[in-house]
Image 1 (cartoon, rainbow, N blue to C red):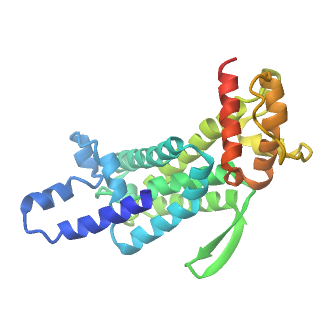
Image 2: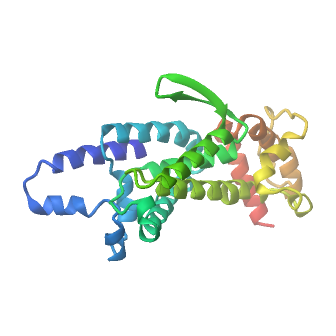
Image 3: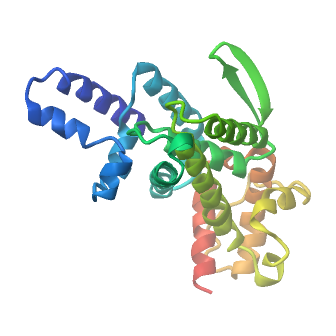
Length: 278
């Protein structure tokens, strides 16, 4: 839906730009994220700028990344959690860019900002943080396939954004990219993985930190979860976790959170409910 929304808005903006009505162009000018306008109270721009793009290539690259990294995340999360991650990354990235424009205008630039990049970089960062040791293949220049672990992709993106800032205003909102990635990592660490930690009894929970959850679970032996059902609603939380949730966590450690089926996600939701009732 986000890809469709971005494409539809892009087409509508192109059509609106052909209008000779001054008020139409005035409305369009209110949509990008402008540091000076935000200071005057145009807070809606923190949302609207995420649906605008500077050109067709800008739109296509963002939609491609949105599909590549957003689809597995949305399958692993609830839709509301996914949207919070996406728009939260966009808003926070926008705020970082605006703050940078106020404090260091030569590095961040002071012009209006458009694009879904902050939200997309948030998705990339969240995916990489959850699936750090998962190998992914990217098409360099849309031609050359390059394989690397997700954590290295995140590191490369951070370095490129920092170098972009140090080189001065280049017309690219590197501050928004960094802000989006920071929000994505924080969301993945404290919301996504944090929710998984709540499944564990207290005596186990204090030995596991969110960034090491996947690695810690990988140290356990393999389990057969093909026959695991979740009709044992009266089981104590600890036993339910041992019988139903542990095999799923082992699967996440081996194949990443995007490998979960709808049935396994329902088991995790049930486990969360059981722990909340304790």
